[in-house]
Image (cartoon, rainbow, N blue to C red):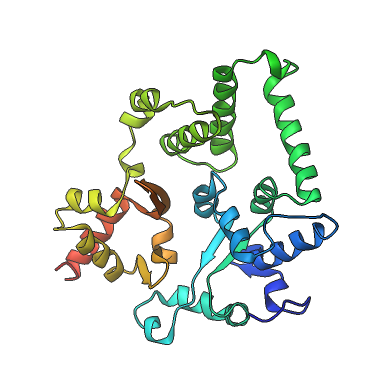
Length: 294
């Protein structure tokens, strides 16, 4: 990629699906500018900056709510198999992809910028982080000295604030917010709420319309022979496409019935798609009626 200048497409404001974004390249350049008076900052290399962005505990929720958009170039050979609406959106961003060497693009809105700033070490980001966390602590603790708050009580208050934010700001279903909140509390405080999570009514009384399954479980539920066959059907129905480096990605049609999901297996981790069972069942019935069911 060539050196960025103020006139680079990667530095421009981007309109995408009705929202305003800047690219991660823009925010990295801003980070470098803010830290130029410091002796050392951690993320001078762009790949390190992106890895840090992806460590945001709620990264998958920001993706789900389109505060962060992760885009991959669709080659001419792949465009015939991809959703036409997605191809149109991607092609509009060809100047940005070209400037980035056709590597993945990450678009962030103002909400995501604030979240990212709390993970950066330039002076401006640190000051913003202190201001945000101070305000949150005052609202949460309501005058109680932090030193008198037991770790379990502090974790409980953070969990409660997390669930309120998930409901009020993002309209995230309670069972999903609880699952992600337990991960966050475990990472921050080494307190494991999993036993309570498993006993929570929201985890056992999930509305049928909100049940979300990974392809392996989805295949079992729908009588498909394997996760691989399930993924191919989801692709055939125009709900997802596969990229050589990014794996399966939801199309605009599939985005409304799927969410990115964090997974961990031994030393490996990453993200895949979970699908809303009721919505996929409806698509499957429609495909069967139209003769699209193998």
